[in-house]
Length: 522
Length: 106
Image 1 (spheres, chains in turn purple, blue):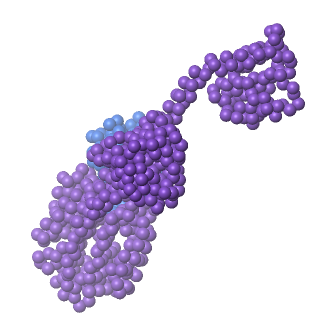
Image 2 (cartoon, one colour):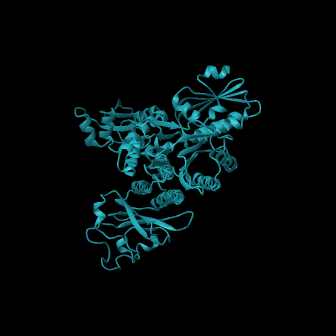
Image 3 (tube, chains in turn blue, orange):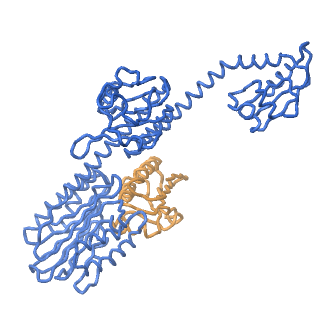
């Protein structure tokens, strides 16, 4: 900067070539903007506008001036002497010499900004699984980088009945501007995009031979935003090759979209396709896990003398599903087995392991193995099923002949036993290690006469990130007293779950509530 | 998750919720620590505010797959950590100390 200022200063001379006195004045950013409204473009040497100069220096009779400015500094050199044209030639010379360089710098900066934009869009898009946010983000980003007046993204989804339907996002204008138009149909203009044949870019779509050939509108519907420049890019799934949707950009002026805009938009469309693919795969996996764990829910038998309420609630958030289960099994001897358990982890793998363990327990239960033997055998099986993952399980058998409950517990939370006199007892805490870990499962026996309740539950009911297990169990016990008083036990159980989890359980929950009715089969 | 090593101990400090999301990361750090074959591997759970079963299964695995001459000890004092370990009786085999100095002293 200093060297250029010095060179320019020496260029001020009269017609005979003799130097004239030059004043060098550093400008504040505000003053610099007045002389150079567009701001400097790299190191800029220019002759300021005469009117702006008079405005800045009203009391000085300036005969010649040159402004030297860069991003951080601006200096005005001027004289009031009899100056010739030499300083003008130097200013022009510097401009000519640096123009090509500046062009290159500008172009490289443009490239860098583009790569930055693409990169950040890619990171944002591929880091999320929420389809609505992906499409809106992608539409906003592409509309911004193309400088379009508005952009839209139409995408196809398949509903639960297997039917395809189309949704869209809009960027740049309020959604209401489009809401009264029908979905774009597969007309000649739109077809290449919806068929995935490639990008369509037009300087003036109204002059395109494909435009306006379809009834009823023969062009754009009335009230549509005016479009001349048009750019449309297909979004194609990288895994299936299926067209997921299309980006459409419009601008009322002629020839606004360039080859570069086309290139960037294709880049964003590529990332959007990956993100949409991920979201769809995630959705599919989640539905599969939900479906799996639902299909494994048992049919609860009617058992004379017992009033049963059972609940299974998948996690309310995310992919957290599939580890918990319950079962109620009628044994050949007339006893009833109650099972509740929890496999570590979530998702399809936890759900399938749970299915196997549940089946193993059912099989051994029907052989009438004692709780202690049953859990030992299942634990041995489970040890081979999973690698240091484990499952907890509470297994209790009610014998209606002597009204006893015989139980064993593989690392599961204690059960709650409410005696006929309303006193509450927790049973089976820390009797043994989980399935797959422990090898010895002692059993205990408790009286379970008419008027008693047994409650089995999983940790999702009493424990969360924000709730200490010990407190959770205390709250459960308090809440169970109210359930016992209720006439509608099922409704009271639902209320209890709602109350304990505040409606926001991020783990799955299983619950068995057994009431031994007075005057039952026993 | 931080792994510090001294002459004969590898110390793993875990903070936050040791749940399904954090468990695989702890598993990785445990494996890294085990490769050093320290005489002592201490997993400090003092900064853990939630211990899910996925986390417990990593702790169990760290203990059961430890290198031949390595001892695994846990540091935990709060009920939030101790109760789940007691309910599952993992305390039968996992060595839990109330403080880091107790764990290092054995």
